[in-house]
Image (cartoon, rainbow, N blue to C red; front, side, top):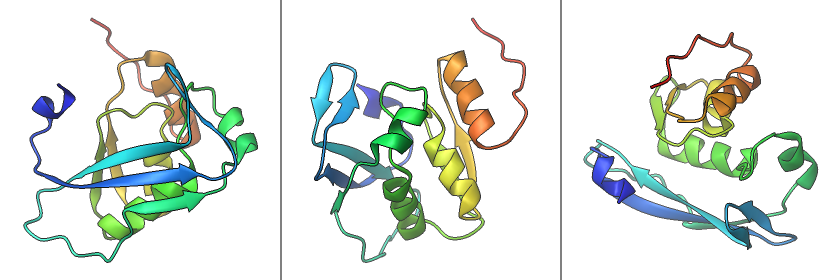
Length: 137
């Protein structure tokens, strides 16, 4: 259902496997998380792996006030391999702002979409930006 709203072509799926713990999710815990890659580029060749193993840094993940935070090493890996400095990233499920945070650190721009105002505020604070007044409804 979500893919119906994405206007960019689907290119690839990426899996991150936590070798030392569980990743929190809305309905329980998992050993992996996945990301779907969409792009308007006709060809993408970046020699990226489709599966990465990582050690879950529970201190980092617990410090973010979000039920399913994503690890910065994994998101940074994806941004570095699927974009160039100055590119614009789109995260339609921004959550705590990990994509925006990593994109900024790596010299990319990011547009994030998030339905929950409290997570917009967390994302803005992570990126050291002022929180804009949000219109709800």
